[in-house]
Structures are given as structure tokens and as C-alpha cells.
Length: 292
Image (cartoon, rainbow, N blue to C red):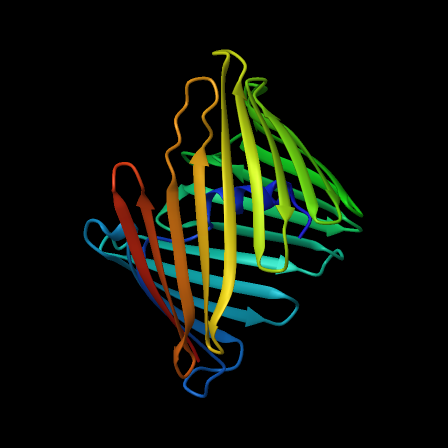
């Protein structure tokens, strides 16, 4: 989808691997006889990065006529409850949702997005309510335009009460056959430039450069990824990334891998492992997902 966050996503996913290292089990039930049409029940248990105590969540999603969707989610053991109401269809490509904790109106958030003819706009408003009165909100807005192989985007955070401009960024991306070039500037300080090449259908490689204007620091990272089909019901991906030996930096390879596939009827599993070659530090995560 053509939103600001999709610009340079190819390089980001290549460098990080895009893997999860949480231990998680999730279950989604929708229109399965035990629930009414339009109602979806979701539950999950998560242990973040394989550390600490696991947490749980339970969500009910109900699709109503006129493109209305009502959601309610509870978190354990905190007992925190959030709810949201979203609507789409009043204007083609437009969707709006209002969410927050019913017990705390200060958490209210209004999120809107518009997707039309290669253009994507998102606008999130928070700090809408203060006490018992409406407040000038904090606005997080972004816009992107995709025209064929070229994409341009801008994002900013604005405090409408004071008129203060917070974080902001501009980004651009160009695709040419198997090559993807992207560049961004954030807060007039951080410059990023990346190049990713699809070597073949399963292999890609790329380089990302980061320059801190105020500090005058520069770093370059390289990465390569290989995907393969291990079994008709199982696939794998291997990613190797490292800083390049430029401006005093040393090679420090980080190897990431993931194996995923179907392990039972309507249940998939994924195992992710990341190892720092020099320090031998590692982390891993196992995720199971059942959809009925």
C-alpha cells in the first residue's frame, strides 16, 4: 500500500531480516459456527524477546453493516481494556477510527487514512481530551505518492496547541528493474541512503549508509538474504548483515534465520534465530498461529 512507511521498506526488511523474536501463540476464530457471522475472536499469549513474564490479550472484532467495525481488547495481567470504532466507505479510500481506554478518556485517539490513485495519507490525533474538555491535539501526519517506479513522501508531528513542529522527515524511492534506491532525511540531522538489488527470485543484497549531520558520523551496513523452499509446506530465509569497515568500523556479522510452515491443520509455526558472530550473543523466538 502506498503510504510513507512503505518507502525504503525493502532496505529495512533486508537489513533487519523482518523477523520476530517473541515467543507467541495466537488463535483467530471467525465465522466458524461457534461465533456469529461478522464476529471474530482473537487471543494471544506473548513473551517479548523470550524474556520476562508472558502477557495475554483477548480481542473481539464485530463487523457491522455500513462498513462499521467495533473492536474491544483486554490485556492480561494488567487488566487494561481498549475499544475502537472504525468506519470505511463514506468516501472512497477513506477510513477513520476512534480508539482508547473507556476508563481513561485522555487515551482517546483518532486515526484517519486516505488511499486514492497512488496517494496515501495518514493522520493520527492524540491528546484530544484533557480533563473534561476537548484539547488541541497532537497530530502525526504523513503523505506519500507512488507514480510507477517513483515514490515521494513526507511526515511530521505537530503540537497544534503550541504550533511546535516535532519530528519530521522526507523520503524518496526509485525502482529500476531489479534495483531499488531510496533516500531519507529526518529532523535535518539523519540522512539515510540505501540500494537493494534482487539478484534472482530468491536472493537479494543491499547496502545502507547513515550519516549524522550534527555529529559528522557516518556508517555503512551491508546485507544479503536468501530464501528457499525446504519442503512443500515449509520455507526458510537466511540473512547476513554487518557494518562495513569504513571510518574505523569493524566487520561484525549478524546472522538471522527463520523457518516457517504449516505444522497442523489451520496452524502455522515459525522459528527465528539471530546470532552475533563476534560476541556469540543470540536470541530466538517461536510463534504459532491458528486460524479457524
